Length: 203
Image (cartoon, rainbow, N blue to C red; front, side):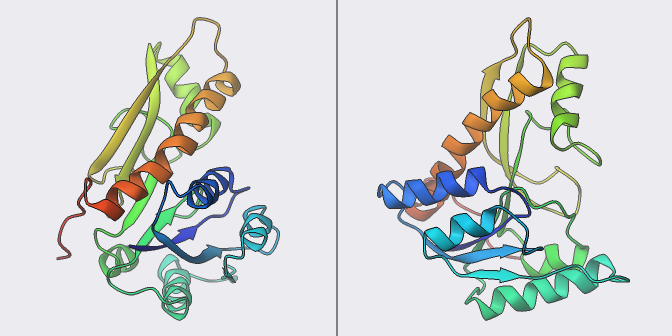
């Protein structure tokens, strides 16, 4: 199984994925990193690991689909085909319906809460953890799921939980959830590689 990482962040989960490949825990092949800005921290991590980098910057006046079509072309140029998995790790853009259809059942995302709770528009980063705390939840965690044309609504592949502690802040809860994310995203990619997690047949 080949995969390409899409990230517009520092790349902490990407680094955990690189480490898993180095240790032989993840045997899938990373064809490259696609990001949206030369300023992203994930780029340095890719370069240190010898992973090709493609940068597709958002242009003024771009519609969501305009941007996604250029992303799609960059992915194809990196060697992606209909069997390639797109691993969104801190990708901060909502995909267009066109892109979701083009990569149907091949885009994997991680959400820092137990979906369907605390997902949807605006639910990212500390906003998610603020919402978990405000709701008085006793548990939180990560949801690794396929992306569809909704926001955080796609089929769930794996969920892992952690406790919400009495004195948690958004920052302390986020750190604990991120540890789950770094542990389980590479594991899910390996599960897909060996077939213990099966992606639906493309429509």
